[in-house]
Image (cartoon, rainbow, N blue to C red; front, side):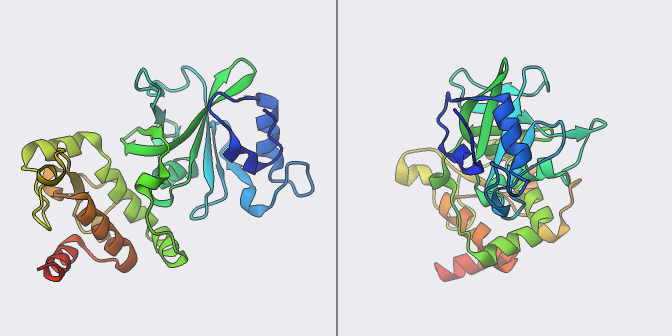
Length: 269
């Protein structure tokens, strides 16, 4: 497979093979006007040297992320299941310290907000094998879990007003997303309570015959910092519809959980 322009990445199929030279040239010369790989400012592929991760465009207008993995680079990295549907990918660190302000880490953490695909490549000799498009499904302290990309299941409003709001509040909102995707704490929350929506009091299993609930991190977003310590009392359990509504109000109007809860309960009384 020959990549001539950035948009060719969006046409790859799992199993396609790209030479290391071709991908290197695409990344380097996508930045150079009048080069054979140039396809406009919005298609520039950015990178942090030697870290194996690149991104197309800058936040909040990132169009996609490229990840190139080599066996043994990071101990956390690798497939998490035999079906190769999920992949653990480590945050990048400098002197063994992870900073979520690092652009290479920001584009991973922000993916659930902006919904761009993550193109995963694995090394095979002098080529890269394209494994498919992925999304961030879980954020842990030192790595993210990538799952096969299913944008229709996670899409949220992306009008220009909301995109600007998300970007201006990205530090706080990203911390919120990290809390909700902390697998260990969410598991403890769900084990400690009945699975009843805190807003509408519905029980998902009663209606759909499937046991399901979502955890919402309700600590006021204005108090967040990257060092915020979370515990099970910071969470409420919500049905998918109420959880989606809470996030829309958070992102659009900057409202806090208790205020949104009262509003939704009053409107649906």
